[in-house]
Length: 194
Image (cartoon, rainbow, N blue to C red; front, top):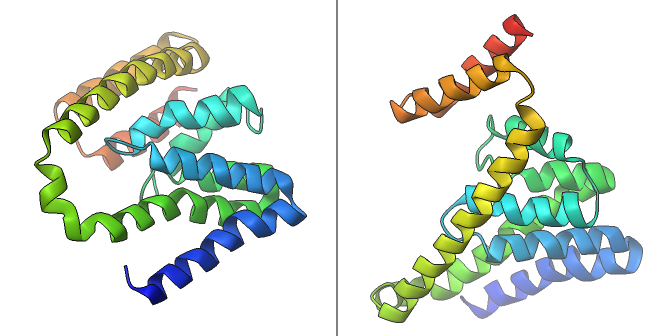
């Protein structure tokens, strides 16, 4: 990254962390959480679900489990559907400013890492210790995802209709039906069935 890029990155970091710390400590805490989540998002957005849930639902109670599930469902119609949950939680915790800061915070660390490490990508990707480390991290996240799946199922699957919708969505995804069709079909079927 160029010196000018580091100056801009420092300015963004100050706006996302230091300013909220002085005026709205909850927003500073929210931003730190989402920056941490972004740094730990190995393997894609779905690996962030357990991290986000642990912090914003279990630890701080900014949203309920039901609201968290709804936020993820609504996010399916946006780019970056899982990570954009930061916008939803930010809004719930701090209104429009919280939504804006949460969104910036969740993308900022990966932007810095990407721009810093991009010139060294070829050397890093061939490193055996890095490949082994990523494999272990992904295995740990799989365990966390299974726990979150259990919790979501306990909250969302209340009767045979919801179980049927889940099974139909699973089969559709297994048959490689487009995700937007699955989500849209689930929305339409839920309106018709419930």
